[in-house]
Image (cartoon, rainbow, N blue to C red; front, top):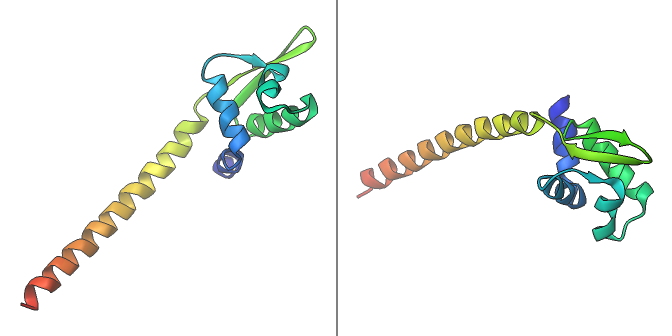
Length: 107
């Protein structure tokens, strides 16, 4: 399932920071690896996870691999989150109403 890959990719702090960095524009694997003090191989593994989740796209340009934010995958995750947020809010509102009613009948 795509959402499983998205949430799995987002579960890692390094990968979330990569997405933040790519929000400022494209970057090579080397540029992404530098602030983390990470090897190119290590960064390639993180980028591959993000790419498999559809969160990042890569393109080979000369001898480097350019990375960019992917499209629409976070929209799917946000839709899922918003659906369950509304569901829980309704349940909690119902629970609040129950306790308010119960409190009023005990007096």
